[in-house]
Image (cartoon, rainbow, N blue to C red; front, side, top):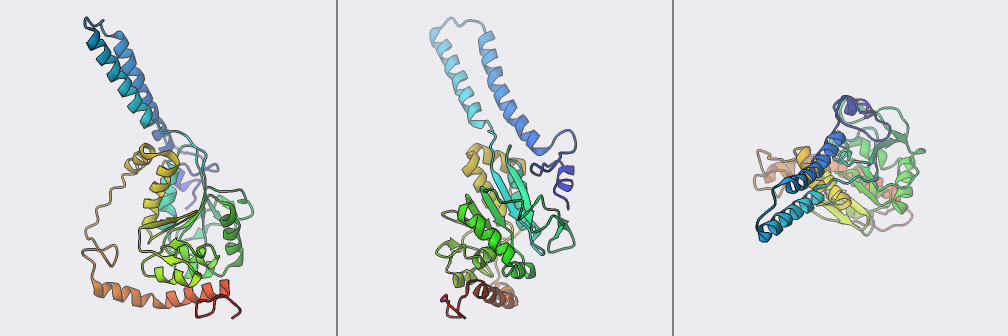
Length: 318
């Protein structure tokens, strides 16, 4: 999947390097929404001006008050343009929805630059057979970012946790960027880079406790914000905290418009998205946890090698 062609070809615009295809893309649609709000306010003023003079001064004042209130409401709905710079790190074997979910949310912020970043510009395979073409390489993405996001995965995540070039890129941005974040087991990569020590953080529920070996404080929440770190739970949590960041950067009205525009209104058939869900089967939770225990053990070992952590959890020479 090429972010400059595949997404744009579906009516999306993928950062500075992308070229929208077709008469209207999603950002244009939101611009039209903002314009229509402004136009409605203007139309209200024109209608008020064209109406016959009121015999009653009280009625005239009421009309003006109503018009003023309407204009203020329309101004509140205006979707202002911004200039956020957002990078989503890709590595072989990442989970596609971890990256594409928040990417899709952020694309709807007018003026924002949303880019996929990887070691090279070669297409990066995700956990299936598809791949995403990066907009930039590590070497080309040295400017400060408002958000650098790391998706999760399985085998690919373990490899990224011990890839020094990837970890150094994260450390560089972790020192100076606005926010460094993750979705799902992407937090394990942040942990291996030493970016979560002393921070409250979360991950996929199966691997959340692994964070403790890097000095993080595991928290069971959909997403967790601690200073300039934001970590999300499993897979779909990236959409939730993507909307939260839109709210932080652009305000309530903008975030509500984006949520409505992407029709994010999940109604799953079961309340079993976490082991604590009303429909969750404890036996199934135990089975899933047990099946992934080898992954957790390998992740713990990878963090230990990256940070020089002894089995006791204390840093030092092995």
